[in-house]
Image 1 (cartoon, rainbow, N blue to C red):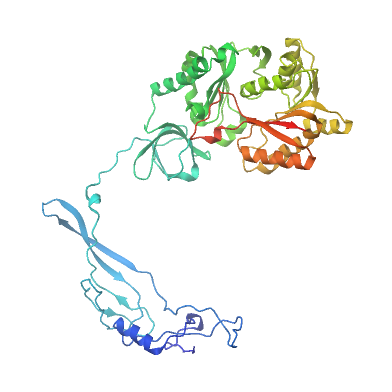
Image 2 (image 1 turned 180 degrees about the vertical axis):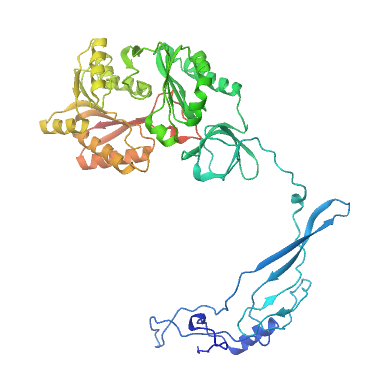
Amino acid sequence: MSIVRAANPRMTTSMMTTWTATTPRRRERGRRRCGIEDAPARMSRPPRAGRRSADGPVRGRTVPATLPRRRIRFDCKREPRADRDGTDVPPRRKCQINATIPVSAGAQIPPDRGRSPPTGVISGRTGFASPVLRYDAPAMEHPKESRHVEAVERVVPWVEVRPSAPGRFVYKRMIRAVSPDARPGQVVAVYDRGGQALGCAHYNPHSQIALRMLRAGSPGVDEAFWRDAIFRAAQLRVETLRLPEMTDACRMIHSEGDGLSGLVADRYGDVLAVELYSLGMYRTIERLLPLLHDACGTRRHLVETSARVQELEGFQAKAIRSADLPDELKITENGVRFRVSFTTGHKTGFFCDQRENRRRFAERVRGGEVLDACAYTGGFGLYAAVLGGAKAVTCVDLDEEAVALLRRNADLNQVRVDAVHADAFGYLRQMQMNGRMFDAVVLDPPKLVFGLKDEGDGRRKYFDLNRLAMPLVRSGGWLLTCSCSGALRREEFVQMLRTVAHQTGRAAQLVELTGAGPDHPVRLDHPEGEYLKAAWLRLT
C-alpha cells in the first residue's frame, strides 16, 4: 500500500481514502474496459491510527476509494404521441441527465452491451471537477395497465389512511390525507391509498383516536344503519341471553362490541343511562335516543360524558336528562336488590359487568368470612350475604357517599354488613398488623391504568393492593382479584400475581380467569374491548 498525493492541488487530505492493495495491471484493465484511458489514478491516504497487525504495520479501515459525486438530476420533457390505433398513450420522455463520473473532458462514452448507444460527448472541466454527461435517454415505457386508469370517485367527506392492521380504531398517526370539507364529529368515508373504500367512521382530528369505525365496506351510514345496529344489540340481550328473566339491569349497547363505537347504554328499569366516549356520538345521540328507547323498552334517560373523555376528545359536553328522571331507583339482580344513584354514582350508576362473577363468588364462599375491599355500593359483599349465607361480611370503600348507599342496600336486603369508610390500602395494612384472616377476599378497584402516561404508577398500585391482600386469606380460601384497566393485558396481570405470590410466600392456584358478562361482547377485530379481568386464586 502506498500514498499518492492529489493531482488537483485543491483536494484536501479529507478527500483521500485508503484502498485495498490492487495490482497496476488490474487497475489498467478497469480503466480500459470503461474506455477511459486518461482517468486519474485512485487516491489513497494514510490509514487511521489503530491496532497493529501481527507483522507490525498500522492497520486502518479499508474502503474503496471514490471520487466526490453529485446527485443525478433529470430534466425530462414529455412529447405527445399516439398508438397505432390513434389512441393517446403516455408520451416518451426526452431527458437531460447530469451525472458525475471520474473522466476527463472530451472522452467518448462507450455503448452498453446489448443496448443502443446514447449520443453525446462528455463536457466539463479537467482534473477532479465534476464533468457533465448530456445525452438523450431512450424512452421509458409505462406499464400497460396505467394507460387506462380512471380516477376513483370518492364520497365526501373522506379520509385516506395508511396500511394498518384491521380494527375499530384508526389513530392519528395513521391518517394519510383528509378532504377539506371533513369536520370534527362527522361521519366520513374511509379509503386506502389505492382508493378502495374501507368503510365509514366518526372523525375527530383532536383525539389520538382520529377514526372510530362504524361500518366496514360501505362509505356511509343512514337511519337504517343506526336502527339495525341498535335493535340487533337489544335482540342479543332480550331474546338470546334472556337477561330480563334474571335482572332488570343490564348493558344494552356496548360500544365497539355492538358496532357503535363510543356509545355505552345501560338499562335500569325504565331508565336508560348512557355514557359517551367520542365527539361523534355526542353530536349524534339526540337522533338516536328515540331508537334506543324503542329498542330497550325504556322511557327516561340520562346521557353523560366524563371530564376525562372531554379532555381526550377535545370538546365540552352537557348532560342530557329527562325531566322526570329520579335521583335513584331500585333494581334486582339474581334476587339481590340494589339502589342505583344517578346523582352520586360512578359510571352509569352500577357495574353490570360483574354480574356473573358476583354469582360465582356467592357460590364459593358459603358460610365463610368475607372481606370486600373497594366495595362501592356492596356488590360482592351483598351477594355473599344474601345468596352465599356468609357468616360475616366486611365492605370497605373510600367514597363516603358509596358507603352510605351500601348501608341502605344492606337494609334493603335485610342482611348485616359491616360497612367501613376507609382507604383499602391502609385498611389491609391494619388487618395484617392485627393478624386478621378471612375465608375470601375480593379486590375490585377502579381503573388504575389509563394509558402510557400513568402506566407505571397504576401497575404499582395493583401490585401493592394484591401484596397486602394475599396474606389475609386463610389456607384453602379464595382471593378474587380484578382489573378493569384495558391497558393492562391479561398475561401481564397474571404475571404480576405470580410475582406477588412469590414475594409473599403463598402457594396460589389460578382456578379460573373470567371477564365481563355476556352482555359485554367483544369483537374479534377489537381485542381492546376485553378490558375486565377477574382472577380466581385458591391459596394453600
